[in-house]
Image 1 (cartoon, rainbow, N blue to C red):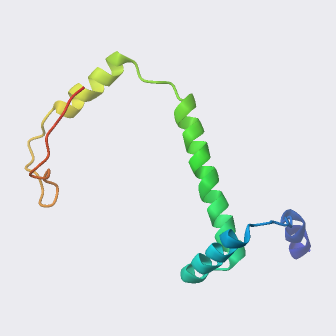
Image 2: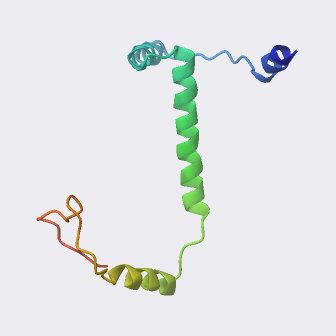
Amino acid sequence: MPNEARKNEIAKFPLRLMPSVRRTAEVFSKKEGVSLNQFINVAVAEKLAHLEHEEWVRSRKQPSKELAARALKLLDKAGNKPVEAGDELPKDYRATRR
């Protein structure tokens, strides 16, 4: 019975792709070692995640100038630990403030 319930959850959706898009997707799905179906599922999921993130960024409350200033002040506080190897700023780095 569980298999029957699962079959009902997965809807079939005929998808028409332009031939060039399908060929490219097939090439990359083979490189990734997954089926074309799995490749398309992941591609759609990645696109949806990107769109949802953009929507969240547009709709989120922007921090006040005071809150941003407090955050920058906090970041300006220097710790007393030496910088660990590999965490140094690049030699050509130049700090800029707006």
